[in-house]
Image (cartoon, rainbow, N blue to C red; front, side):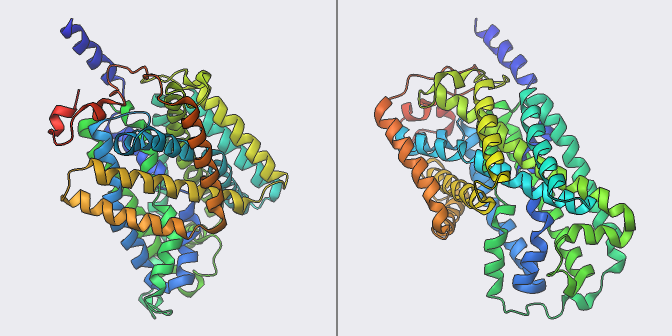
Length: 453
């Protein structure tokens, strides 16, 4: 009997995500449409010294990335951050974290798609209709990709990420002959204090590590591949960001802060008229990647929450490993398209959607990092790194302003649901998914090996 279980687990694992497809999903979660415009915005804030802001954020995000990877490695679960928070702080806190992530997607996905749509329209010489159509296609493509299953979705994303990295590398290589050393002078025209302001603007170019925690249970070998995928993603993302920004400063120089399309300007240096269609492709891929990953993670989180009884039971369909969470995915699609229609019709402001999504994601990340302080081995490098990262995330959250209303409303709704339903029924798990209450059943202080199934 034990042998059969082992064989079943092995067969199930063979169908999971391998290292490179997992890395494609990771890279897709981090690399987003922000790199299309933020090099110019950061240069306007801090001049060539904005390079320091990109580098500092890359260093800062390293402990964040590995804290989520380590927690996911110890107990891969579709609940992701909500599962970590449950182990650390209890069920009601986990419902709050789950609601914040799940219901942030209808705010964030349309806003991200519209950013990409506007860039595509600009590259192709189109107007508002072109931008709206491009944004709608990106949204529908992300949900359709997840509807056919994570295996197909991850293959698509891996191919697109290879294309994107190649395209950005081409932009840097073709623009390199036009670089001038004098474009780095003066290096800090607004003083080095401005680097901090640039870093606050750039933060969400580095967000997304929390989204992949919901997909850890889909990895073929999470014990081995989560760390490797994290390292590969940090290398790819760091190389792309630093390379693109350095090339933008060196080639565009004083024209960079005023550029609305710095990637297009880089491509035009080497490709001329061919730059416009390639820029449109880059914008589409950069927008599709994070939406695809966040939808994949949120749809599985929604199914896990429904299994726990804090969302309608119909959303629990497809909660098993390797399945498509059809009910949760369909609900997200409807809410997202309604939000998109409201924005296009002028009923809501796009700035409101961006601010609301950012506040929710920041709160969720802070929640997850706070859980890491309790779950990771004390007085290790990762533990100290998580403490620093959590403090910074709380500070960023406090600067969210009016957008804090959205996570506060969602938190209040989650608390109300928790009080109404009390302790959730035991979730149905697959052989490779760790039961959510396992960590709570293991006394604190036991070895990590003893806590594993």
